[in-house]
Amino acid sequence: MRVQHIGYGARGFYRIAGLGRRWDMTPQDAQRRLQILHFLDEHGLEAPLDAFGVSSRTLYRWKATLKAQGGNPAALAAQSSAPKQRRTPQTDARLVAENRRLRTLYPKLVKAKLDVLLAPWCVQHGITLASVSTLGRIIARAPDKMRQTLARLNSLGQRKPLRRNPCPTHRPRPAVGPDCAAPTPKTLLSDNGGEFEGDFDRLLKLHRIQRWHAYPKTPKMNAHAERPHHALGQKSPLSFLIQHQPECQRYWTHTPC
Image (cartoon, rainbow, N blue to C red; front, side):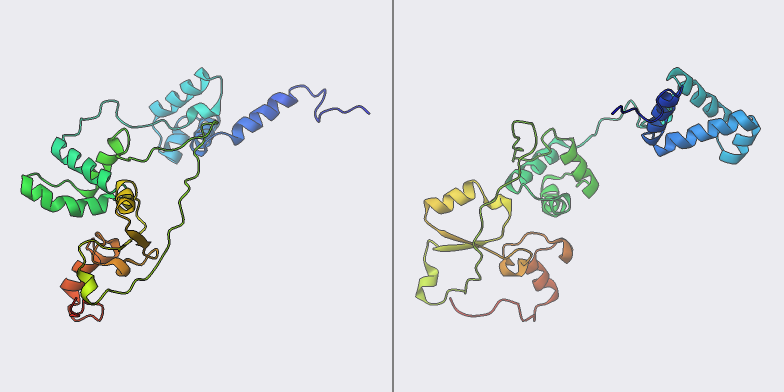
């Protein structure tokens, strides 16, 4: 059985098909500009100026670009309009260093929480606190993005999925009685943040301290140690209770310990 491609023997068929595939891969803005150029060829210069609000200089520049690229419509795609010469950020080096130090201690600390923690530090050192957006740009400009955990890659250069050990969750009861004043705790409760791994986890194992993890998305289980929270206006749960709900049922009790 003899098999032939569709369009076999038709002159120019594969060239037209190639143009069709090229058109499908052309960005939308380039397609629109090409249509404007076709409108220019059919109706003259005045019509596209009134219909599309494009200057004559821009139209002729598009035509020259299209001709230089051999009629490839993808050449009309919009290019980056970022300036070639950008001003150098005048950020205080001490602020950048403190930003990195906090990100080293708390790798998952976002820019909004960094703003809360940096405010008293800036007042103490007489430094103007940058905006939240500027803090984010400081992190973005760093070559390592101020991250301490390196990505693991396989033999193909693809990122390996992060494997986490299952964390036991427990809701411990507060200790009462004479044993609660022991100098070394036997059990420690923390959330599931990555800042508690590494040296902190090894220290617990060295002293044989059992570690329990709070349930995910339940900061009230560990309110005395929870950091600034987005839902509470970048305040810790304990600070929010002290300021707004001194008579709340979740306020600390006066049980002697």
